[in-house]
Amino acid sequence: MNKFKAAMESRVSITQLMLPSHSNFGGKVHGGHILNLMDQIAFACASKHSRSYCVTASVNKVDFLNPIEVGELVTLKASINYTGRTSMVVGVRVESENITTGVKKHCNSSYFTMVSKDNDGKSMEVPGLLVENIEGARRFARSIRRKNQASIRSNAYEPANFKVAEHLTSLANENIKLVLR
Image (cartoon, rainbow, N blue to C red; front, side, top):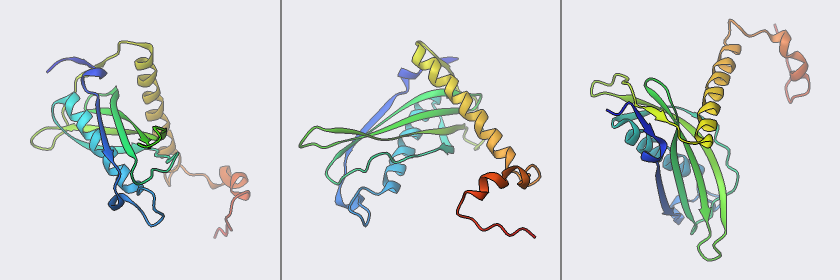
């Protein structure tokens, strides 16, 4: 196994035509279908980097920025942004293209944390990331920040750590009737 691999070595992209069978009741492409494609390409990218079977550990925030129409081409691009000891963060970008006008739209971007597994299902080490430019360093550093923020968010709202008094002011402006006993 290589000790370090460049992101370029593991990049993956796919393009698919969106069919009526991919649509929701509103006539747009169903978000669940896009999430499925995103998970598939994240798996392919992580597996290509690690040369092993990978599983999805988490998905960081998926915002659907623009709807995708039936009949449009959807292109998904995936790249390794971060490597830990056994995990990788895969950045996934989704774009749609109207094939009659050529107009392209950025539909969403998300970050999938994938974990490399051996034949016994145990986590295994992955090659580190060889960063060759400032953009790669920015993505790596941003992944570290995102990981740290997620940990802080998770810990702050654990039942043992949650202090309701610290949140009363922010709750007062929300659509909530708070009746504490």
